[in-house]
Image (tube, rainbow, N blue to C red; front, side, top):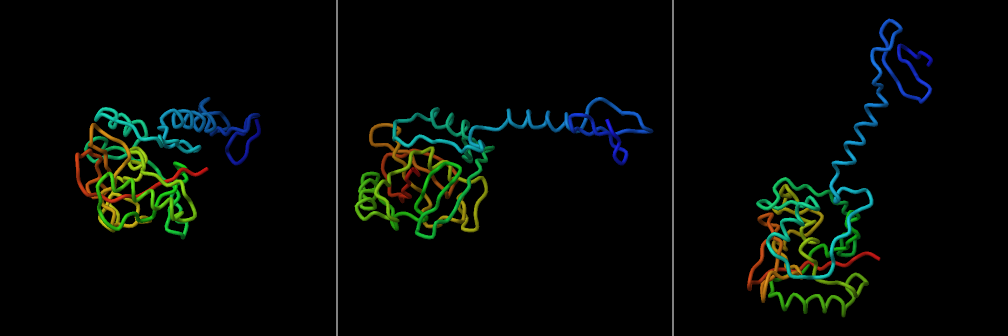
Length: 212
């Protein structure tokens, strides 16, 4: 070791404080930092991975327990089902009516449907987007409930919704492509910060596509 301004530099490049020329203890700053990163990496949820998270894109039937488990798995916020959730997005506005989330690899409509509609009409709305090649793409679809859940933020934005202000504030409640039972579908409410299912109502659509 060699001494630099009251600090010992060992052969591995780690530092240890000294007092009167003697090493105070054998736990160097390097060891502390190493231990911190080991603990930090173990505690990071899947949704916080630097490689991003891959969310289910195909619709399916889900129970209440399925949805609650999904929220916990990805650290998604829901005001009653998972109030401690805090998923970290990485939004980029594309300047063409779309927003990309680099944390999930998804491209979203910045706004969505101008009016509320039934679940069946929501599918027709997406078909029109694809026919007209909205933003230059023809692979838009209804999002799964976990994809929609990734947009719910734990704190309200300036528009008083639980969604990032990069998005339009008009689409307060949006349909997913997932079902709960016969004629019952899951939806995300950015107004209440919750995910629920309902038999029949008029909600908005915010279509999504997976980046290739």
